[in-house]
Image (cartoon, rainbow, N blue to C red):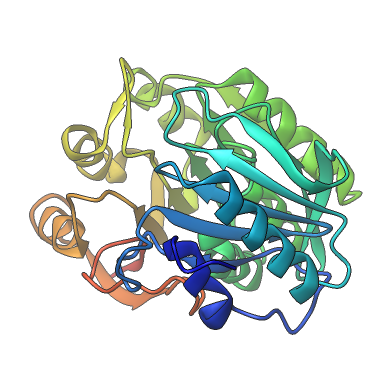
Length: 303
């Protein structure tokens, strides 16, 4: 690869997967740990290597990187590029086959992934350890999954023996994929609910459906007309007593560039002092965060 592009440095720091069958991030420049590569991430969604660019790069440099990825991943059948700096986030095939649908493996579970249909694939790889935590701690629990998206947490919870799961999201298509994810894993859904609701107008409904033993709250940073995490997260925290059971556990997630863990710590102290911070679930090691930002997953338990 030529030296005229920062992309030429990526092969030397690329995360090499021990298990080629598992979906995972291979390179995370967004955490500012690699100067000059803050605009690049690379995911391995077997058999597809997916490059995300948040700023343009020369086509020749991208093609050279694609060849390096194909060589590093012997089971790769396709290297694709998503232009995240464009509003619709289009995806193009740089090398190999055109693959738009696949089932991504994570541990003993699988999740539907779509390439080129939306800006996001349907599976957030930085949340892998969070899903694992849910699978390990859900036995017998009644779970409320807010901002459920494609219900990855729900799949993990059912695999972990959850008594019941209520998935809440404003997107019907995302919840439909959530149902498909349960079917993909041959999981019964008689104890799983899928509710298309505006959470901030539905606290009464959550109260009637509760109480819950585990809250999973993973809001988007911002969605025009529906969610502004800095403004809206406290609205949930101050109402926990309405729908959480005594002795409940909270998984509070935050992935906002302008907010850090102190945002959650301070609001929990003010709005929900009965809960104590128990542990923090960290993303996979490949998600290097040089500035202390990135995904935060805090586990709180009722005192």
